[in-house]
Length: 142
Image 1: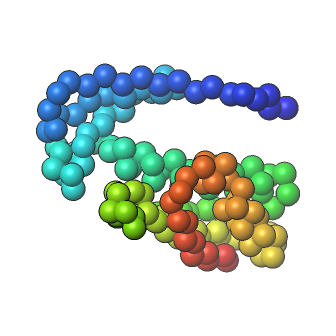
Image 2: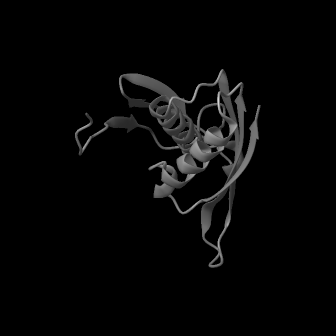
């Protein structure tokens, strides 16, 4: 049984300079980060936008896997391709405007249940539901 609240921890240290990369740590892992070239940074490492996109797409995958396990839905593979659109809102404030998820589920045991669980995942994935970003999905089930 899962007990809440749950805390996750990380740390990051960086020096001044838009063209410099830095290291960020969480869960005992370290990863390189940089301001993306699209924002005149150095690029070449993960950006905050990359992490945002990965958090949302992997929230979907993790939640779907949990729902599938408890619902006894079997499948061979799930593939998710994601596109994050950064744009301005109606007040000209830059935001993570849209996330397009192309979800491909292969060799499922029950097509109807798979579609139901995909919809449930999008509606209830707690990281997906914690953001203002519009989520658009394209689903291919075989």
